[in-house]
Amino acid sequence: MRSVIVAIVMVSLLSVAVTIVVADRVFDGTVTKDPYEKGLLWDHVQKEKEDSGLSVSLNNDGFATGMNALSLDILDKTGGPLRKAAVSVTVSRPSTTAYDKTYTCENKADGSWRSEVDLPLYGYWDLEIRIIRGGSDILFEKQVYAKK
Image (tube, rainbow, N blue to C red; front, side, top):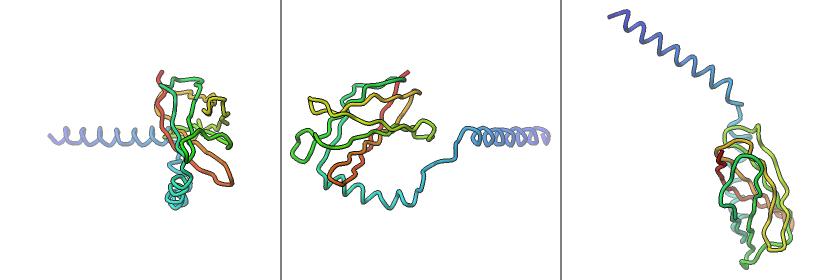
């Protein structure tokens, strides 16, 4: 009986050790860069977004791994399409910074904003949409899923 208990304890300790080693090799160490400062800015960013009167929506039906044509509708306070601004999209994975990339969006004749974005892996991707106009810098966040 004692040998069975010792064997169970040894298997448990070995499985914990293997888990720690694998996790240490896979995780890049970044959970959130500057978490305290990011937390302090949260309310300020939300108030700026609300005061701007802007709204952002994705026109895409879905995403797949590889290059995707991202299409955004950005509406101003009056509900009309936003025409004059600098718009960019930063694409990142929730679990790592290894695939972070920023793309510039172009304003099209129909009022939409478009850019080609690369999603090299399947799964969830975070989109940070940055709109700069009239001296203000406004961020919108969306999450998308890329299929295989």
